[in-house]
Image (cartoon, rainbow, N blue to C red; front, top):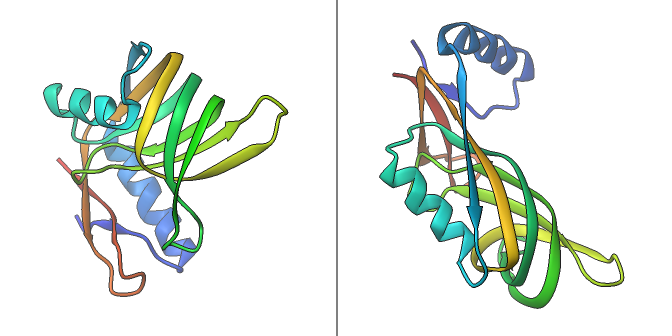
Amino acid sequence: MLPIRNSRETTLFVLRSLEMAAQMGSMRCIPVRFKPAQELRQSLLDMVKSLNLKAAFVVTCVGSVTKATLRMADSSSIVTFEGPFEIVSLVGTLSGGEGGHLHISLSDSKGKVIGGHVVGNLIVHTTAEVVVGECEGVRFEREDDKETGYEELVVYAK
């Protein structure tokens, strides 16, 4: 089977995704709670490694953080925000590379929302309740993509 690669050819990508989904089987869910002062990103990555998850991703997350270091959309600015902040959304993949690929949206006490690519220092304030999913039957890898200049997700059948 050919790997599914990120592509601008949406139709081909969707067809390959459907073909892969038919072979994947089921998804399993792993609920976990992180406590105050834990660094969320690295804790998630450590959990994925210790459980030997090969195609893990964030299903949902609620909670709060006191600090977050994010890469902004221009792909070069890295900013550390001091909170507390509510986690409005945390999404992304956790397998297929050392750092995963997570994006987060956070709201402050006035409801102002900030967000970006998580690079570290995502420190739990009161709690972070996360459900991690794993696609069974596939594995995630990250490979250099000449088009983007980054390591991008590639999905392989197990």
